[in-house]
Length: 368
Image (cartoon, rainbow, N blue to C red):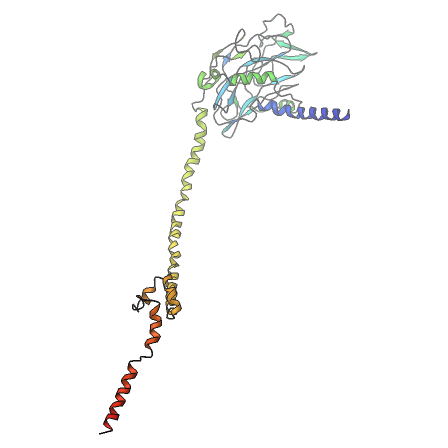
């Protein structure tokens, strides 16, 4: 029993730790792009489907697969728990890059870059409604309340004290807004990441080619949906006006940054240095010191000197230097017998009889 309880506790802990990673993996956390996102399109908000829903505005997301921005339609999402509001994600510049900061659920709306997403998200806070007693109250002046089932409504005119534009990013040439003290406090609140319904909305948008900037030129045919994943049927609205798109295409940006590296490639021309080192390869003639062994070859010629003895004569076939031994061509016809013939000629027997004849002459004169 203790083992089962311990196992369940461990599995529960692993699941809780994995939730943030699973959630952020689907909302393009820390995505970096070097081309600004298009302006926000103009569209109508679909009617609220029921009590407890919170409006989540549409935004431009980035796809690494197609190297392009695509529009994630705005939609109504049920809050993950009462008293929680949605803080939209936003793009912000960091140097020459545009970084996506994902949104989150919390008891207060935090900083979302000062971007005017509309319908209560004017750049700071949320004017579309508030929670009280476990129920969401909606501001009719900025929310499409055409459903008679929603009775928690009120009217409050929203006055924007910021420049109204449709720029979709913070910093650089975009919106110059900084988080307030209240925004910073909201960032330290307890948060809940995007819900499964929001992930479904983004995944469905990513798989629709018509929502990519390359196809819609900043004017998506599906700008908002009544519920997550409902991309067709009643309540789906298109954009009334598109947003301006940067002249630089996102899928062309990477080569532009890689181009300087391509210019650095000539530095790789240091390879010519090996060409200068090639003379070292010419030093290989130094290996021609092998001629020294050629001079040592005469030592092999000295071997024929040892061949003066009859024994080396048998070694003569080993070296072609035998021609030096050919100074005595006579032994070639009969190599073996001639060495034995030489000791026979040493006695010179015919000459000995000549000397006795000369001795006979003096004896012959004696009788006279």
